[in-house]
Image (cartoon, rainbow, N blue to C red; front, side, top):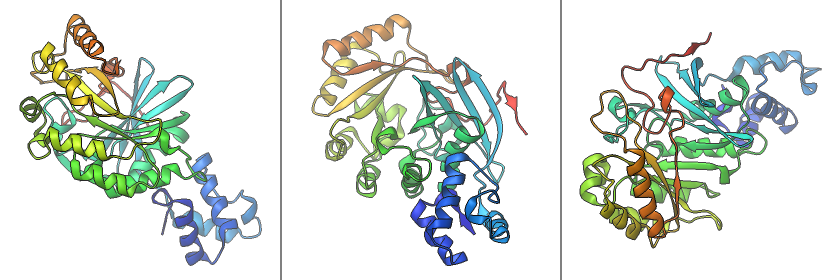
Length: 350
């Protein structure tokens, strides 16, 4: 079988040659047709005019089953869609408008085993890793079924990408292939809770640098271990050392996410300690107000509290950007994807 969503152009061409004895004139036409246009039927391609039986054979043997689009819900320009996988598990992906194009937040796992206290996905536990096909399929769906001009991809959906690194790295290779979906690596971001070994492996595995984002969320090991259990085995000092070693592209910086939670990590001294932690790093900080999830005891900061924390960081000369609550109304904001008792006021499909 030909698994096109798991293959770069060259991998697909090699498999095509082995299976059908046809060179890149044929395989390139198929790859471009499927990946760039979303086409399914091959009979209309010029290369198959004299070989209709071959076209039908390739159609029947080419695997394109990343899942079925079953729901979508929109709010404030943000669209969340649900894909049902072959084993009836669901994943969520989020399309965010960015100027004239769109960013797609993709999932890398069904659930997550990191157990962060502020994250709804973490309440699910880890059900399984997504395959390369299921990751790439989210981009394919957003572009060719929903019609969004997706040019930026962020691995910030359900799951910890570095906990499924092999499939994530292969997905990046497929997404970045210029003869296919053609997402430039500089527009791909991999987010992590801070898996030190995984950061090192990503640096070695990724032939062209993608952006790295880290969900930091606390200025001290005590607070971070309380809300992010991964910190007990990957403490802040080890994380900083890994970030300093990560090979950044010339004009890029590590993206640091800091979810501001009332009465947890929002005190003035927390801002000062955070600024000192970040000072030796080439980093940009996104300050994100906590997005409450059903059943959570944590509280969002007040607008005044958020602004005070932001102003303190600016005073400490931290490169910090305000992050709004895009998607909060449809449970599509940071930390809100998934959940065992998921209900969506959504538009069913199919």
